Image (cartoon, rainbow, N blue to C red; front, side, top):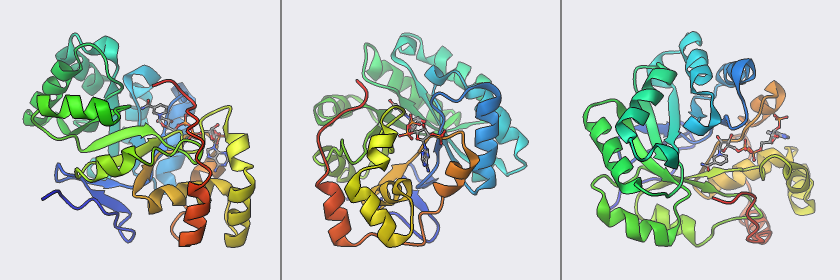
Length: 275
Ligand code: NAP
């Protein structure tokens, strides 16, 4: 029997197969560096966000750690995800230590492999070892689809707790999401608002704008809520405190089955990045 990964909308968390609870909404930090990153995370934490997504490749793990340490919020209440990049797979032990040192927050809540690459199985096995050593609590994958998972999963011991893939109304992964979820693995979407350069079109979409107006919410909130109702965790990126606050106000309305269907019908299979 697989574990239950249905979202708890009261606590706003999901129970991972690793036994740890993770918030179902957070902030993504791609393209946020230095002071902007610290300020954005501080604003997010002040708005009640407790899930932060970073990666080696974002060059901001130090800033994420600084904001977490300086927040005054107990470490246990914050959930930090980081990722190893394929150019680190040849020496994963060192890469894990590097992430721990840069973040400097005692332990890593979740570490993912950023996308498939040479040495990914070995890198994953090194993450498994770090779980045993209590340096990392949960592990998972990013940019793994059905074929890649079919090949990868038999080669590892710990079932990933999370798979993080590109998901937005124009790229919905309607085949991949149920495949992953049926294995008790939580799905998290990146580029929930389409990603930089694409947000205007997505937020201005006629169907989404109409649904937003009907609920007195913004297009961003409707898209994030659509994800949550599909059981997909959201990590919108923002450096604007007003947007950061807005992106947390997702629990005072509910999309109807008809509205969900209308957004589902917007799928174009249009990827906004190459992973
Ligand atoms: P995104 O969340 O789809 O969009 C971010 C853009 O949306 C920013 O320009 C932001 O501008 C704007 N925005 C945010 N909230 C808004 C709101 N309420 N109203 C209007 N505009 C709003 O793109 P992303 O940040 O690139 O992706 C999300 C996260 O996914 C990343 O930060 C990263 O953590 C993760 N990611 C992972 C991968 C992977 O391969 N695993 C790849 C890409 C991204 P403002 O700053 O002005 O708010």
